[in-house]
Amino acid sequence: MWCKRVNFIPPFDLNEQFKLIGEEVGAAALEILASGRYIGGAPVDQFEQQFAQYIGTSHAIGCNSGTDALFLALRSLDIGAGDEVITSPFTFISTAGVISAVGAKPVFIDIDPQTFNLDLNQIEAAITPRTKAIIPVHLFGQPVDMTRLMAIAHSHNLWVVEDCAQSAGGTWQGKKLGSIGHIGCFSFYPTKNLGACGDGGAMTTHDATIDAKLRMLRDHGQRQRYACETIGVNSRLDALQAVILSIKLRHLDIWNAQRQAIADRYDSMLQPLPGIVTPQAIAGGTSVWNQYTIRLLDTDRLIDSGQVLDSGDRAKDLSQHRRDQVRQQLQQQGIGSMVYYPIPLHLQPVYAELGYRSGDLPIAEQMAREVLSLPMFPELSLVQQEQVVYTLKDCLIQT
Ligand SMILES: *Cc1c(COP(=O)(O)O)cnc(C)c1O
Image 1 (cartoon, rainbow, N blue to C red):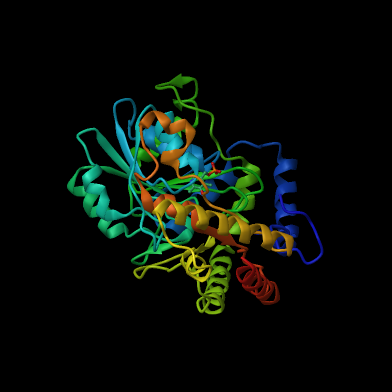
Image 2: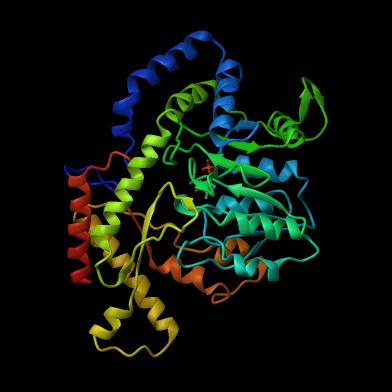
């Protein structure tokens, strides 16, 4: 954990945002507290309508977290034992965890080093008669090419569940992410682009049947009170979080535009630096920059120090070493940064049973060794950003 120090720049900072909307949020929260109605009711209905309208779907269903949104999505599509679901190995654990939780098997395919997202060229080879769905993740806010992905899914009759946890407000071909697949899944964890003051999540869909099923599943499997049709879960969005999210939703486009401006500035300040790769936004959509993630390459260092690239493994070890060294030095000099994600999912201890080996998904493994996410939040000031870049330059010289 980073420490609170004068001038310390954290990877994300929720205090500045609270200063902006704190009064309004406080008043709305007090009203809920005084109402005595804390579960469901008008605040949740209103937020669901506003969110559906924002995303461009006919339905939005609130729930307890992004993880639950993904879990409920798979349950609503009757995905379970014996089924396979294709997804990315380079994402937060819950994207794959929910596949296992419903009893299905995650099938990982490698990623594209430019976008950190699923390499669409590899999907078809991974499809088997058991494949039921694909979960594309719009990682770091960057859209997956949904036109191509949906074409592949349609031709093989597969469901598409978009993991939009990091991409609220992002678009592909003018459509909001979460409105293109069969179900969109959102997290309102506080550090996401649209964050609650606690846990929260939502699912979006155009399909009335799926909507009804999701509503039933999030409320103990009951369509009518005390008449259970299936075993569901308790995963509702609290009224308190719903009113806070309604307030924040009004600011989301502005906050995302601020993130874009910060990303543009990082690009222009960092692109000339040797040995690092800045994130590339793909044409055809808009990223919402939940993270600004650079790669720290090791080649220059190897050549500079006169070492010979004797094997791929050696280069990979050094690369990891260098990223971790840079991160540690940044921390010492007052800059917080994060590594999303240090271990790709196919190599997680819990998935040893799936039989993947190191080297099976080489791009994901390389990215896990090279990535570093720099401070990124809408209120990051120009002065702070310059401090991040100057310090990073300093650390790069030293490592
Ligand atoms: C945050 C996140 C989730 C899970 O969301 P929670 O609300 O924390 O359960 C799922 N997938 C991705 C890509 C995430 O970043």
